[in-house]
Length: 495
Image 1 (cartoon, rainbow, N blue to C red):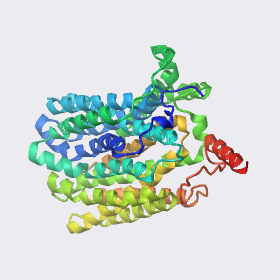
Image 2: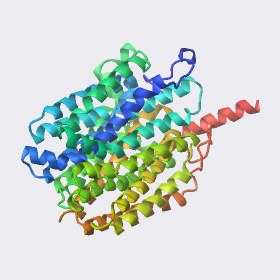
Image 3: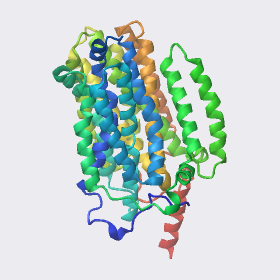
Image 4: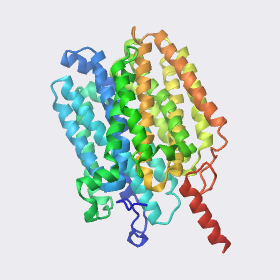
């Protein structure tokens, strides 16, 4: 295997507590930036449209631009972290977040705000894959099969809790200080994350002289593969966001670019998007699909219900945001005990069942429903968010090859964003005539279908274990590296 910048440092260089709070805290803060920016903008769209004298519909570009940038940047950042070093890419991403916060906070046009959202999307995309690379590297250096459950759980909590509290925070900021603070809030948070990361994250291995040139780096990261992936993924997201008025040119670009990119990736020895490994790695592929479908449901509630509560129910931005706060609280409370037990199958089943229950509840809501009914529906989806994200992230860590954990983690987020983009598309279709009760009920029907798909995919998957073991299982459906580790361990124990 080609030597990369993410090889584990010798165990003798580790501190006495390899996963102390000084190591995990900057990772948690960084991992929270992307989810919170994904959702915090929800309550600021109407004030932005009013201030800039544009239509509310045109502000959807602020949502889609971050989705698009994140969908492309997540696996790219993971690949760069594997090759150039996770700490370097993590710090670079934080700097971009700072810049994006300033551009958006002082922007005077929708175009400038869109540029800011792209910068924020690219910058925040570095945190999660880099965190997974750093955690994997430290676990291997400490000779652990996996980090303590609380470490991965903390990453998941940072993502889920901030995603769910984004609308309440956005509502408070917009109501108290104006819509610009939906951008400016990134400045102090990113500055804190930057200082902590520079002080506490371990340095990356020194790159050899032969691996520093542009040509060498471009070859190792598979630059043509990244560009092909970026263009085809951008075209796909643009096509999805254009629905129901299909942008056929974007679909044509996707087909024209994706086809040769697939051929290139299949022929390359060390591709950016390892299609062969993904096809052979059933657990990883199914983890991606489960995450996409579940986030479709969660984001449909975050955005769909927020719009409905403001336009259909007549709530203010602050009230609508605060009513979704219990959703984040439930996610955070459930995440810690779930993460410590490394459970997979049970939580995924619970996430599917609660999505079905929440979807049914959504279909029963009307503009005359009591506020407590809205809170109960959001609480149910809080359970969905917690159980799904914890279980799927644990399954990801287990199924991804160690030397590809950065790229695999980025793709995990990319599939999640495809689910999020699809939720925005569905929302624009069902609310095309206004955020009415009928549109909300139609949205609930779609979520029932998504919940059934996740439930069937989980129940019928015999390979999906109830609990991730401490030692590799060596099953046929596991990636090749697990089998090798299992055979080596068995041979050693027999001797």
